[in-house]
Image (cartoon, rainbow, N blue to C red; front, top):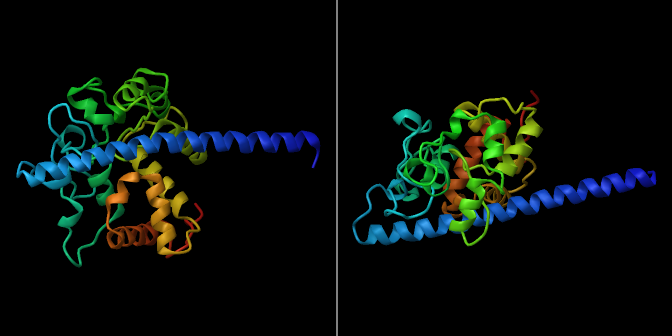
Amino acid sequence: MSLANSIGSFAQGFANGATAKKDRAERAAVMAQNDRLIDMMGQQMQRGGAQGGFGAMPPAGGLGYGGAAPANDGAPPATGSAGASAGDFKPGQTIDLWSLMDKHEGAGDYDTLFGHSQRDGQFKGTRISNMTIGQAIDFANPRGAYGQWVAGKNGGTVATPMGRHQIVGSTLKRAAEQMGLDPSTPFNRDTQDAVARHLAANRLRGASSPEAARAAIRSEWVGFRKVPDAQLDQAISGFREQYMGGGVGARPPVS
């Protein structure tokens, strides 16, 4: 390998590492936020004030993602039982990854922003699902109004979660490049779901055990840390059967 190629490879590896570090920092902020919400919801439920588990609204001024936000225009979440706690699943009931995601990430709302600020907060009326991918990436610029507002609410740590699957801006940019999606592609329901499937498949590809698969999916969506292993195993298995053509270590079919 020539010196120029060696230097190029090193630079690319360094850039990839920096991007991964940035993603981890953003997801750490989301993790801390989810933990605060879950603790707050648990206190509410003990006082008898919360209805519907993780689907209940936090107190006024509270932060968190798992509110009772309906999907766009009041339509129900695409995968059903959002709004119940993980414990509400009955023995033998089918548990899919997206239902769990709705409980522990974006509450089934394709417009969800940090602290539900798209509803009545700093970014009231913002409709991420009406943006293009390019516009959503620009909106999530860490130096932009959204990223800086989140940093102010989150101890100085920037996080830019967006949509039903709480995808941060840097992750969306990288996924769009990998999927060959033009910046002009609408960041609507179909696109958000497709990106989430891509991210999940990438994480699960090559995971050689249930433990590895759980760790992989939890590294992408920290809300799944609160999901019991057995439930997450079932959801991962269903995802692999539906989208990856098999069991542990399966790869997505070639398109």
